[in-house]
Image (cartoon, rainbow, N blue to C red; front, side, top):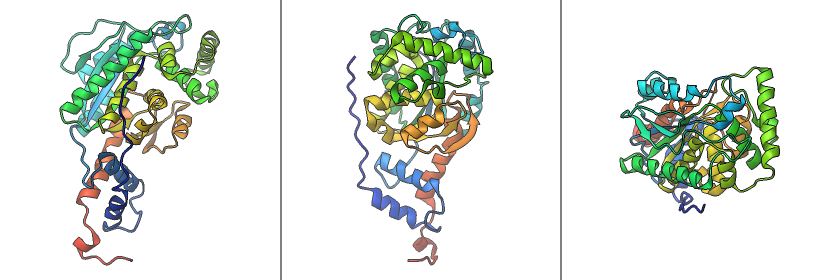
Length: 346
């Protein structure tokens, strides 16, 4: 399934000018720490000395996983549809945080195993009612995987056309930490036991059962290397849509806010296809889900927050977004030494 994205590496021409602008603010050199590198990164992504965050949007992709029937989660598959209903009713954590920080929140039915009622915040994009159980067969066909990728890209373009230049992706899907763990293992060669975590709160016995089931899947599918084949074999519709969404956002020059383990694994797949996608990303937080820290180390990045979150939904993005605002605002509005008439060291 060939992909045709054109993702340019951000120009470094403004790097010196941006750094000089940061250094001339009324503060000791480097005194704003990580906010300074964040401001520099955003300015380079947008190729401007005056970056802005316009119409920020958070898309939550929801989909069910056939592997859930094998007992890898503490919750039944029905919770996916129930949580989507909670999102649409405004009652989930991500609703609270999105309202707090005025993020436009939309929910995408990528493959929920239920008939969802129409809602102004719901995007109906169902590929199928959940994937197949990858213990027995590939999770989806290559054609369905390509449709999911294309759909994710289209949904991002819709937001871009509405003036959005800063976007993030959350997810909901019982069983999706299992897909993410296997994808991470295959694509990084990190031992599977270090990729598999407690997900929705497994106890030690349940965690060992989950690991055993995923080891069976490894044996069943054998040696796989091609990213799109892996995505179709082990992924979820929500993960595949996020892959397409990441790639389209990068092609469009949008600033991409990255959430936790599952969203990070979707980015891993995207970066295997187009490494330049990482140049447009801001990593919001370190999840307490085992594997996420190792994933961030694989990316060679430092996340903004470490709050021991393991909720998904894009919750880390919403909590970190004010830091992006602060980085942009200090760069654009903070006085320089010359403007303030303050002496500084040469």
